[in-house]
Image (cartoon, rainbow, N blue to C red; front, side, top):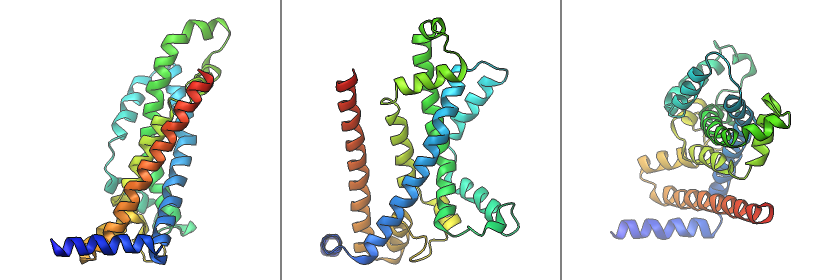
Length: 234
């Protein structure tokens, strides 16, 4: 018990003194996760909205596949991205394996199905409700899809937050494509795993506390923004 108490005390001390190594790891984690969420959101919103509104052969199969991809094992994604970025892979000449860019790519692949699938469900519900009204106004296809995305934009914050939660908790894929290199690709989750295995509990605990706090703050901020916007715009 004394060991755990001492570890917590040292963890709080690391946070309080703004340890350089701690700040570096947190900054890289935010860069990787937020970049991946931004890219996945830009790609996922139109894809999900398009699937919700469009009618074409094989649509239901794509919907089922998209929902299934929400549960992609991170280590499998990491392996696939590794093969793409390795020297023998098609993207090998770019030389981005074991860099933050590779980690962003892996996280984007993991997050995209989540945002796209949740967007599809939300937009499809709205489309079923407003289909006749939009059709009477001449809105069809992409016009209707983008109109609905804008109309329910505050509800779609939930989809983005789900993607952010997946990114923040990711370990397997980023270790494989990033290599967990100190000072280069070491993020909060991979450092927690490494330092815990080494027995360095203070650093692992301090990063764990920061990670939980950041996720809570981002979710609270997004929820507050959503509620404020709903009150203002109805």
